[in-house]
Length: 72
Image (cartoon, rainbow, N blue to C red; front, side, top):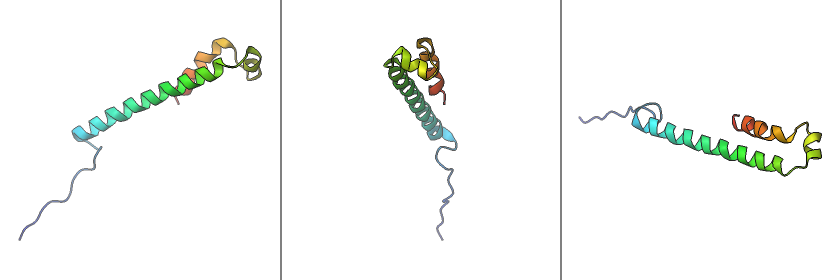
């Protein structure tokens, strides 16, 4: 009588494949966060000083807001 073991660890739970997957996931997340901050920074930079004042920001706040947004 032949038998085989069909119990295998789930991919991503451990081992080399899981570490490689985590590396790519982390890299993708970092690139996405950088791009979100870039888009936010560019959008806020296009606003006039009056428009920024209307939303409670100044020119010096743009980098702070963009960087805080990318951390979410």
